[in-house]
Image (cartoon, rainbow, N blue to C red):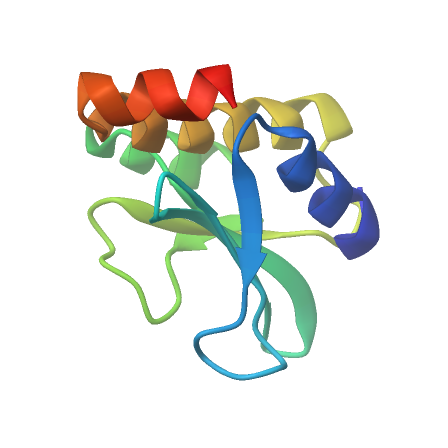
Length: 118
């Protein structure tokens, strides 16, 4: 998966919007006003930052050298995932889905309903 494919997948999510609060070089993707992903380049490698249940982060990072603690993020919750071809697209999609679901489920029930009905 490349950056353009990741962006398209982010925006397929119900209620997902792209913002650029950190400047034009760092697209941020939000649901219900909360960030679930961003596109970045870390160490000159294309990457995305995704939120994940902190109980599973160490296992993910140990199993895949392309997944590291989130660059410029809360390292308990966020991972940087390199998109340079080493990880299967299905795994990347699963990680994106998990990030989106984690953030969506953190919203109030009213906000969730608003997002899902829009």
